Length: 102
Image (cartoon, helix red, strand yellow):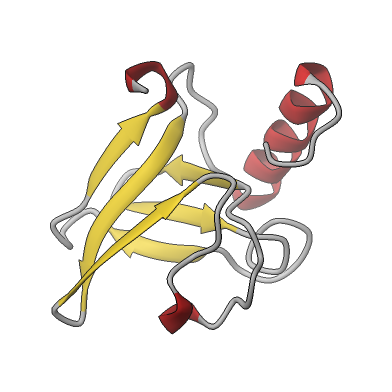
């Protein structure tokens, strides 16, 4: 969780976001996601901004949740504190890299 003061605070924020989005909390956490959107290869990483085509300005990705048929990408105003997360279909040639793989 970017900007968290410590691991305890990071876990509290992560859990609160997951609960508000009805996203599962799993032991394996996604670090990076790659997908294809409108014939363009996309990539995002926790702690870095989304591609500019998503018009989230310089907001950092706070968390990426793996749900049944899609991923939920959260920034401050997209699923983090307000708004809806950015959804990426698992059918969009997506692949996830986990923190444990890093």
